[in-house]
Amino acid sequence: MSYKLQARGDLLAGAQRVGDQVLPGHYEMNFEPDSDEPGPALRLVFEVRGGVPQCREIHMLATEHGREIRRSDLRIALEDHLEWATLSMVMPQDGRGRRQDGGLVLTMDPVELDAFRGIVQSVRRTARRQGPAEPELREAAAVYQSADRAPTAAVAERFGIAHRTASLWISRARKLGYL
View 1 (cartoon, helix red, strand yellow):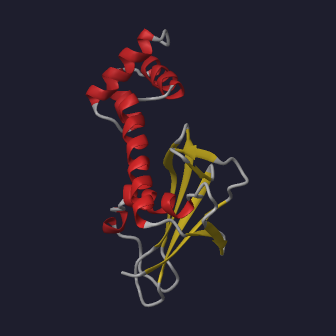
View 2 (spheres, rainbow, N blue to C red):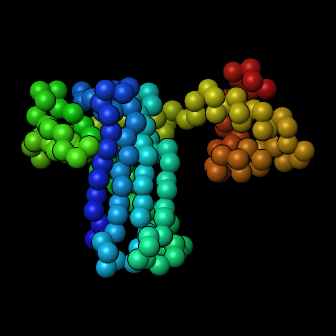
């Protein structure tokens, strides 16, 4: 399936550092199917929070010439798309990129791009290992306290995490005094 890719972001609005590169604080990538392709259009919205690129929104739309959205369309290679969009948005320190149609055309060599992809993967892995941020722990504590029964299961369901992970979050929230 072939798609037209377009990445957009504004470096002037909330630029963030990821490794030694600068990214827009908010950027998006649009995948528009060619007119002879039946698949849906996809828009992914990304933000850099605490130096970590994250996907914050997914929008899928059946196009005028396409078919309905199917379950198989929901299998999105999200990590790959995040890396591609992030690499499309990176602004090299020495300005070796130029704007074109709202996106950035890079002139970084492949070694630099691979190194930056490694940085993006590393900061994302580190963020996942650190667990939930304070607002998530406070919300988990509130869900836990307001549950009629099976409070750990309620936390797991609310955040889409495993029961064991919810137990760890609750334990951490308790240590921080939220429970």
